[in-house]
Length: 200
Figure 1 (cartoon, rainbow, N blue to C red):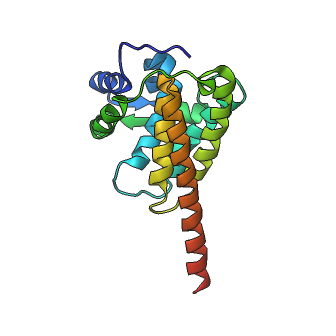
Figure 2 (tube, one colour):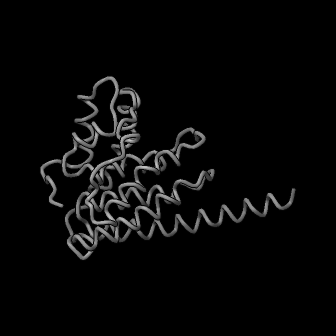
């Protein structure tokens, strides 16, 4: 996947926020971001789980659906042929999107200081199929509605997405490691919840 190296992800998102209409759909966001759209859509779905904010019921599950879909597309070697219609047409207001970009940009800028092209097996076509499986699995974990459980797995997916966007094998490896820790954290919280329920 060849990338436009003249603009970083944070710059692309800032430009999109500046020119956004009153309502944006996931399809519009993806189309405006060109070849980076798959990684950036995954990043957009993961970042809200990394940034502290009010917890809404079903929030993580809704955001996990595009990640699972794109991961499945990559795993099948389809290159992410696009989001399903019911996700592609979901919209967000310009005000919410701009507020999200403003909150996410400082984090992205810090990450981009050490992310850059580092080719390896994971940046090849067969490697991207493996990444697709990982994205789908991590998306399933993210979909579990567990209070305080989504930050680690969300961060792992976000770093993985940045690695996919920039073709950075180091970021991909770190993202996978954080994701494994996130999965273990979710398992721990589930076990604690089951034991707590057994006491009542």
